[in-house]
Length: 210
Image 1 (cartoon, rainbow, N blue to C red):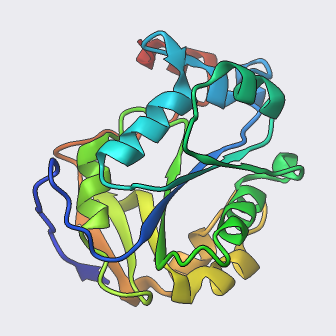
Image 2 (image 1 turned 135 degrees about the horizontal axis):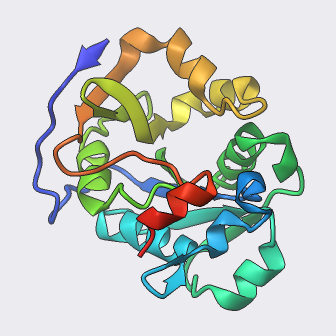
């Protein structure tokens, strides 16, 4: 596995192709009493707004947001102007269905890569997005943030990989199987010094939200 410690400035990410931010925000929050994760409050606003802002401040000028649970409420309550909103009616099948829907929405857009992030990881900010974005070289690029050497999010998929990722994305595994099968091609970008990759999954995790 390639371990390239990209350290480009997080405040001025280089434009290295048309990389679209792809935010997976369809989760229903089953272990949170059925509260859609996109609408959890963080700093006085829905969590999905924070996640979109993180992608934009990290250098993604275009952002696609995959919605599922509470999609109508998210549209009503969250300020997502300028985003492409993608409905995933199969969101209950797990993250894989949202990844497939999101990649499908990029067809015909001219995007060269997708930088995938998760709505329930507010500890990952623009600095990590910028570092992974800077790893883009071509549509063949595979790159991921790493935390103490362990792969995490965000993950960048060059368009050459989209069909393979979509074919293998089932259940809650997302792209895990594809990344494991292409381990030697993945550039790991260490982000442990600028981000925390925790998830908001349970009621106890809500204490991490402000």
